Image (cartoon, rainbow, N blue to C red; front, side, top):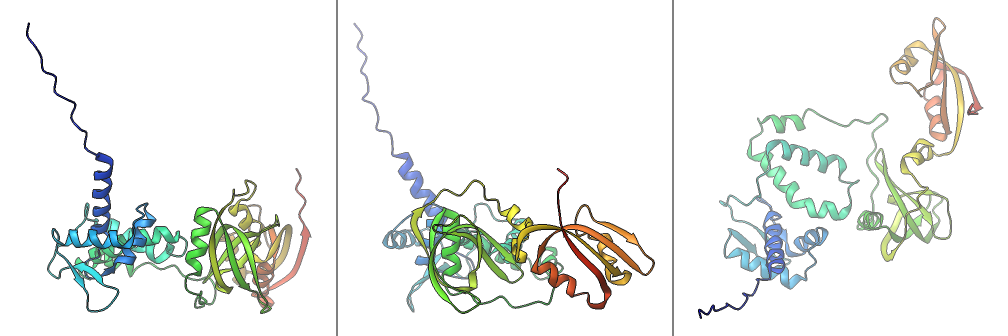
Length: 333
């Protein structure tokens, strides 16, 4: 009788562990900028933001190992040590960013930096740096570089410099908002009164040069807007909350809450000289706006939210506007 020898089952390699180590190594080299440098601490923060929680010693060992296979160098002339690609190195990318992708990332960094979660911004720093290098390497005559000089987001009022935000505050606010975590803040209001409060962060809005956190104070069910630059300190707690399903940031904005109103809708009527009010034919105050031509003036009627910002806007026309009236709006439904 013929005998068949059965081979013992082979040990399956620990694929997940090996794959995770490879992924982390790739994430590290992708985040080392060319033409600049980065610390192990910065890399640790960027990796944590994308799910690789590692202690500092592990990151440092990985960097030393990678230095044996890639053109990486360590500047140990001062602490913390900084890591970079060697001067003539081609760097590393998976795959390299195209000029169009680099342009998009550069614009996103410039215009959306304050509105993106801090963890996301940290995890993307290597890509932002790679995008800048990619555009710079094409020379100042490239169409992508030229495009950055051709576009601007302009202010509709007198430009103001953004108020200073204490170090670390915006990051803590962003992390708490991102993770649905209660936030402890020390806040100074416009009357210079300072208090500590625990708040439920619900939304973040940029209004001109200022950032506002929409939140609920612990123990209350109404929303308030806190100017982020007036926070003396902020710390995300480890306590999570379930966002209230009835809250909607878009509705909060539409109710005029960022314009210092209380959500009351009115029927606004006024007369305005044609040269001052022509733009209202192009950019109406509301969808139901009506305009009557009175010769030298327009008679305008529109349903809007009553607010301090509306009053400020009306006063800005000076003698060009007259016969202003406000009536509480009653829906026909």
